Length: 434
Ligand SMILES: *[C@@H]1O[C@H](CO)[C@@H](O)[C@H](O)[C@H]1NC(C)=O
Ligand SMILES: *[C@@H]1O[C@H](CO)[C@@H](O)[C@H](O)[C@H]1NC(C)=O
Ligand SMILES: *[C@@H]1O[C@H](CO)[C@@H](O)[C@H](O)[C@H]1NC(C)=O
Ligand SMILES: *[C@@H]1O[C@H](CO)[C@@H](O)[C@H](O)[C@H]1NC(C)=O
Ligand SMILES: *[C@@H]1O[C@H](CO)[C@@H](O)[C@H](O)[C@H]1NC(C)=O
Ligand SMILES: *[C@@H]1O[C@H](CO)[C@@H](O)[C@H](O)[C@H]1NC(C)=O
Image (cartoon, rainbow, N blue to C red; front, side):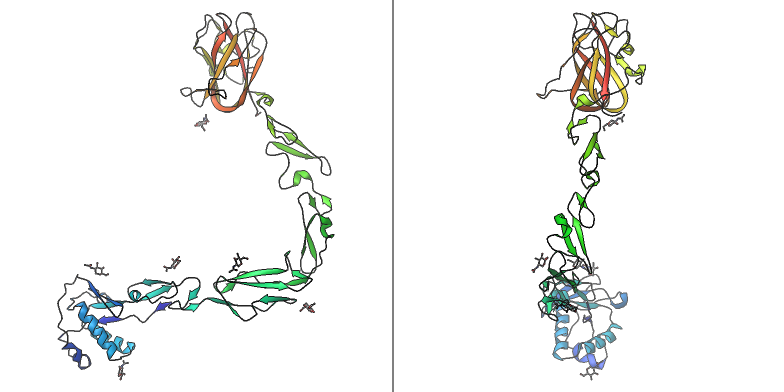
């Protein structure tokens, strides 16, 4: 869409001896313009820009004034020279004079119907909207309405022109439907010069209310019908009940594995922590895997405490023959386990001392964190520190389920109350993950 009718008007000077052009020369007194100076003027809606850009990139001196160029331009017009003729003269002049006047044709707003004019220096381009085309965007973009389908019609009539973005409607005659579709009509839109949809094929409708056993959508293809079965059914006629475990949204959720029990029956085997027919309930009390205090998967070096009295922190393993002991006890005493990796813990169990019935912890708080220096205390729903009820004797295991599982590397029991002046502790933590 490049519009080639741009003008390069080259300036003439006194010294020009060419007869054909000389007649103009007397009328103009060139006013020197510095080589770097630019100027412009507007005449008849055309912006004439003057600058030190000579043709073929040759720099030079501009002995011109923009208003004179405008007059000269007008004079050419008045002589009713053809554009080609003017151009031919100007080209001859350009051999001697190296300053150019470009006509900014975009200034004349040559692009119609909302097209954008792009001036690239030598010419302009109209960037038309989708609805129009042509060098000045004056031609409406249209599509020709195709022939009607067999056993159908098209509106508007075949052969008519429809503008960009407008629709035509194909319709199949009575008892016919659009093949591969559920409707008896189809709408196509003219997009640029193409239709968005092909002309449909109209086929006799072979579907009836009994098709697909009433459990699916019947679709006419060419020469046959097919069923798109409702969820839960499959087979050509939608007669087979789908394996409920194989449907798009299996019933056991993400936390369970579905087992088919024939027909529509199924069983969900839930992941640890989950229960319910569809594994919909999560309970920390269902998390039964230990982190390894009792079975010594947690190593001694990873069990530490604030202090101890004869019996170190490494004795604090559930069911061990002694326990971590403190006597007397301070309010700030604690027992910590480093699980070495981030672990989701759901519960804690405690036990007092095996050998001495006076050593046990009545209540405690739990702190946890990714680093020892940034532990946080587990909170209750009211925003206060959660206090867990611990042991009432030194041998019974008391398990406390967390309100929700927490993920951390360090878990610390903060002693809150104990049996008179004695604290003895054996511990296990529980996770849902094996
Ligand atoms: C003159 O116009 C040319 C081309 O547009 C430009 O490169 C140059 O910087 C302009 N000079 C001045 C002094 O404005
Ligand atoms: C310029 O115009 C004159 C008279 O109209 C004509 O005779 C001549 O052939 C033209 N020249 C060109 C190069 O078209
Ligand atoms: C033409 O207009 C379109 C839409 O505004 C734009 O995306 C595209 O870049 C334009 N083309 C040019 C050459 O400027
Ligand atoms: C449907 O179209 C076919 C193919 O053009 C034609 O043979 C048949 O007669 C048409 N049926 C009717 C009812 O117009
Ligand atoms: C053309 O059809 C499309 C899709 O069916 C619709 O969204 C749009 O509104 C229609 N346009 C006109 C002009 O009717
Ligand atoms: C544990 O998780 C936290 C937060 O995602 C992360 O910054 C930290 O590096 C993790 N620690 C380990 C030991 O993976």
